[in-house]
Image (cartoon, rainbow, N blue to C red):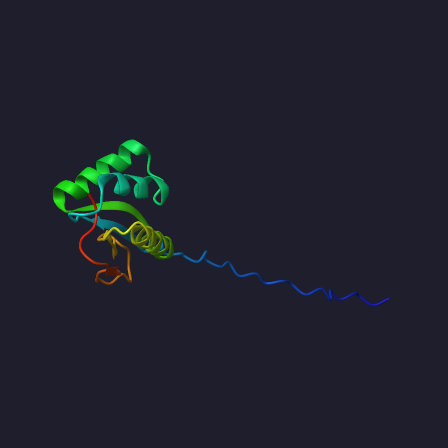
Amino acid sequence: MSPRQDTREGTLTETRAEPQLAKPRLWRVLLHNDDYTTQDFVVWVLESVFQKPRGEAFTIMLSVHRSGMGVAGVYTHDVAETKLNTTRRLAEEHEFPLLVTMEPEADAGPGSGSGSGSGSGSGSGAP
């Protein structure tokens, strides 16, 4: 009898590094003050569109009223854009000139450029 040769082949495995996923860029949705949009409407929008509790919605509305602008929330681009469009539609349906815009967060990660987000609307809207 002749000696048996080992015919099994070895399996080489290579360790792969986990891919690093970058956090998505965040966008601030801003409400702007005007002389026509009621404070109640702004609070209602903050509660219904931005899911803010009544107290927080009232605080944001006062910020808009006193300083001219307030942050309704910070979201990924698609969510921010959806909330912006919903708010604009509601303002138009209720015949308010509420101006709502979005802009990138200042401390966004790598690959983030500058620039303002979508802004349009007549007047600067809020309380």
